[in-house]
Length: 361
Image (cartoon, rainbow, N blue to C red; front, side, top):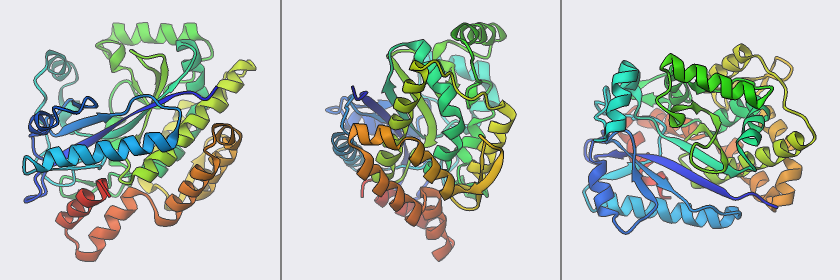
């Protein structure tokens, strides 16, 4: 059986005249009252779009394109725009104004200055799994491939007027949180539960929803949630990455069923691979954590594709994802597009203009 997928994409609200992020998400949501799949996020700079679960990538793509268009129309009715970018390109974004909610105020007290760069936008992918234990073991199997997904989805090179030198500054900024980034390797479910109890005792967690690892059992749904990717600028890139992620989950579930709980990659090695992928994206070399060797990032993307080829074929996604991956590697990631636009006129306002247009292209 082909697992259902549900996705969440986060977008930034910008003023199309100044090109700065603006804390007017509530106005966009009020204008989108007929849309059941749009919600507020932690800051007033952001809105989140969700899709109903679907087993079909084509159907999911149609819904995602329609949702992006509807959110953009709602924003335009307020004199605003939305952009698919992992982090604000321009504007006074630190510290961000938080959405009015007791939970967010509790987080501000607990996490303090960590929230100064919390205006980050990701792609979250939910894939059905039998139960929480399977989700943990699937996470073990996904760990070696998370840096490759970072490189493919990288879309946050500029932050509040500055070139960070990274393809995904969102990954670096988010990695400072106490329970974020790649999950640890858990040989047993009991060790996972023990870790959560210790993290809660430390004060690092408010509750299960603040387990912010890049793969985790969803705290509310019977899914494994993969949160590693910047929100892609291009919908086709989103769908390519979503197809790869589902195929990774299916491939991992088959291995778990055979009793294989994954390769225990040291966390320090995986952290270095994260840093390299976030810095260079698809340019230069990436670390293959399975053998500790640097290889060109597109080569590692090809190895990921070969790893999940059987699951892609089973889902009927093989040709779509193969063509989507070839296209992504040929044209480059969102970060590469942002830098190309900036190189033309050395004007970040032009980058934001291009983001506005490309988000709903």
